[in-house]
Image (cartoon, rainbow, N blue to C red; front, side, top):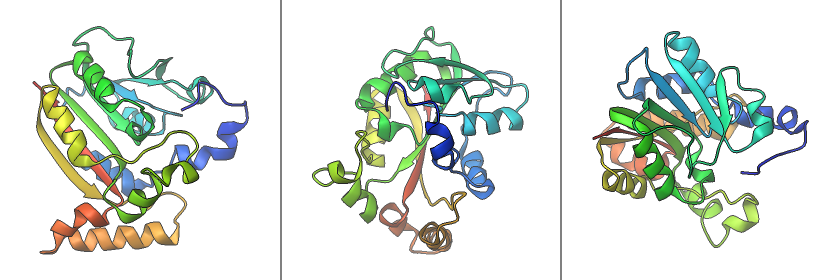
Length: 226
């Protein structure tokens, strides 16, 4: 992600920075790992703070801090915030109770370093959650992986394999790693997103739920630091 954009960038692209509908946020909320509700939560790669802001409203006693490399986006964040690179987070060792990364990891050039920084900053038994585009979904595999990725994305975005991310988490001393395959409607209510949402919801309640790993366009992964 760029260090800066022109001043009106967010106004032109506000929808993509607050993508989740209320139904989508309920899916994320259901997946949240356990953390003290009066603790400190980091919204990693927070963008304009859409998800962190909702969590702050949901848990009023929770201290939410947002961090992002893009300074102009941070001006829209309504809670504590700071600019930082995910590879050098400005927090002391074992100082955070939880970390949430909302559609952020596919922007990070070095996933292993980002996870290592998360592990460093989290307290023992600290909770971690991220959701991101599912690399195994046919559209993601085509548009967000090499060699075609460069034609669709100019900012270095790259889809992530949930199993690869799970393996990194385990190597960096996370346990209780769980993957959930989901679809989000989004606020735009696009026809494709709506169809994906209905298909994934039906498959989740059927014997064919094993197909979700290649049909669901998103995944949520949660873990607990040892």
